[in-house]
Length: 390
Image (tube, rainbow, N blue to C red; front, side, top):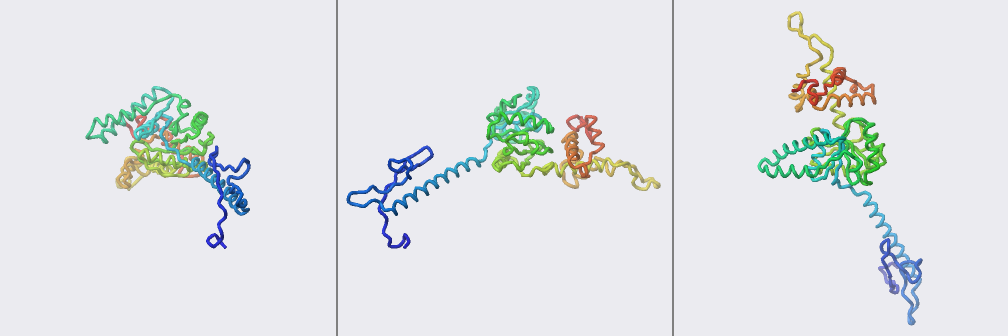
């Protein structure tokens, strides 16, 4: 019958459990190789433990050891799958994007090291961050200017600068790269930093157009490498694209999503596809606006009645900008946005996509864009692009 029946209970037995290096280990009598549980010692007035009792105790010992192994294995797996809580950030590149990333990280309680090639660049970056912070403080602490000043000073105090990236990455949780859009330069940087960064450190690139996988392959931590694409101006724009390559671990991906949220941003995820989400849709739109403008001269209307006029392209850049702002509700027209982003940046993206997919009509180069870039007219940052700026 089963245990619930009238079966007589087995004789009682003692269990000896002693602590060991690997947790709780059983010890049986004088022999180390014996199992953890032993039967009751024989008494003069009672028979030795029955074979059934011994079998039961042996079974209990086996189950207990298996349970301990399972718990130990689960703990190890849990530890390895635990997300990284990013507290210390190293930003490589003190330009507009890098300085913006450093600012929002510092303003949300992270310690930050901002790295660039020279002290002059870093001084300029720090000054730009301070000016940007004061604008934020003026709005955020409009009724309490003193609190605003304290916010600025506290945030600036958590940002230190360095010209030697390798010397500062040994204790960082996250390295965010925001340097020139050049695959070779990025690969050389990450290959070097990979040798000095801690084992747990996550690497991320802020590239807007290069393949993340191609950058990650320069390191030995492809599972701890992803894309973290911010938008300009970083303190204002809420979106962050988190790009997961086929090798990026789920732990790394989730850690970067949590970090983005900690910055007060809204993360969206995307596979490692050219341009990710925004640029994949935005750049072809900008290029189509240029093509709309740069088509050959056409005669419109009735020239015989004196109502005809010549138009370069299908519309002027001013009218295209106005149409998209008033008709589509965009805050900037495409030519205004091109000048703001930088014509050199747009050309670099288009040229890279054209090289990968030369037959795609959306990726065809633009003569007028090429001409302006060749003349070093990159937009607002140089004072002239499609428009002129004072």
